[in-house]
Length: 336
Image (cartoon, rainbow, N blue to C red):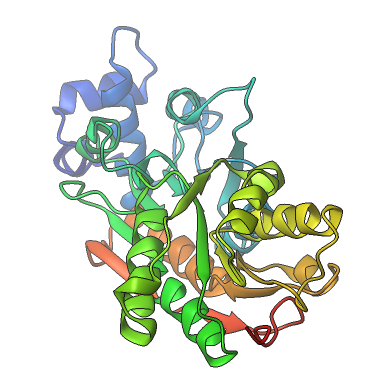
């Protein structure tokens, strides 16, 4: 069957002549044009010519910020399983301090002609950055889906944990346990998830304890070291409980408190965020606010597949309800 050049041209936004040059492997064609034509073939369910198959037919980029935090390998596992079930091959791009970063990975993925890209907690979490890195992909008709974050002006699906609710759930649990001096440790409040968590936390404090109970937000850096670093502030301000924006922060804080001779939760309660199977086996098992990774990951993969197949889904942001998981790192406040 002859390749319907006009259909491909209409879908890609390029002329029949340009489509023909791409399909025949002629030089002098821009990467944007090549990507648009490859995507059009996938959307129209047209098998790529043999010379193009090595250029990424059925490949989907999966960009994550790191793999140290257990939540990101879990996202990768869930998304990869759902992509593979539909005969797409995930290409995992995990960032590291000395390795390629998001923009570099995107260029590599485009050079390989991937059918689409999923971003997990990427640069789209920072609304102060230039959105052109994403709008340019949309303009080239490369399907993208973005997890945990939102950028106004990017015509793509976004799926996020409702971090404002996550902050509220943590506070409400601690208030029920009698805590009145509750702190919040977060990383990089420029980023939408952290900023939303601060909003939810503060609203819940004001609602249940009044404005006088608000303590300064403790902003720190990622990982276990970031949690360790805030321990002195926690003790200096006489907190009886701390809400952390990740499980790794919480574990670092607990380690620092133990080194100073404090028992968790007998002397200070700690709540994390994200949750993974490991958090049930820490000492003590960590109370945390669980991200609905299974639901978000599955939905994100299916939405990207629909985008690739020419069935675009809803734009804007879809929020997913988090869940408070009560374990042993929280307990009643000490009597004054």
